[in-house]
Image 1 (spheres, one colour):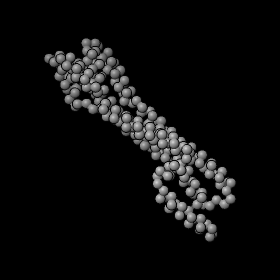
Image 2 (cartoon, rainbow, N blue to C red):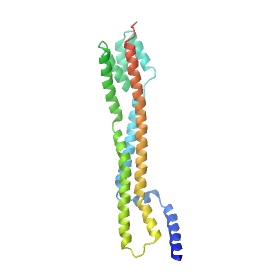
Image 3 (spheres, one colour):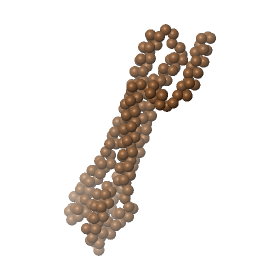
Image 4 (cartoon, rainbow, N blue to C red):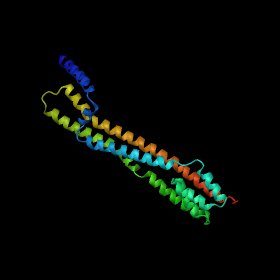
Length: 224
């Protein structure tokens, strides 16, 4: 009984000491598999920021863009309408530019041409997003693998040890769980980033679909 109390006291002391460790020192104790996890984290941050900048740039367009396009087309000033669309550089503007180039052709042909441009612009916005999705799935698995390997080595060491204490076991266990915790955190953050970027893309796609429908309506209006 006395020995058990001593071990519990030692465990509490070890926990207190562990709480004073820096985050970096804890991560270092995670072992070799912390290196790929760190790489996953760096890639996730890089691609999230890169896609965020690109998507925000693609989503910016003047609220009155379609109104100006409509005025130009209704008055027969197709050249001005195309010049505006060509110089705007927004996915919506690129779709409208393609539609303006097809004026005079059947409506179905115009819609198909605009849809093709729209698909290409969506592909550009979704570029590199699968990387975040893959990291969200793989990082936790790497963390679990690191923990399993660590526990196997831990059991092997304890089997060879003479009298392992509760403190020894607890200290070794919490160190081996670091990779699992790190992998889960990276996976969750990557998934949240992936979901957020997809939401922003969906908003831009809605703008593109709305603009496409508006453009077809404009073509069916009588010119002045």
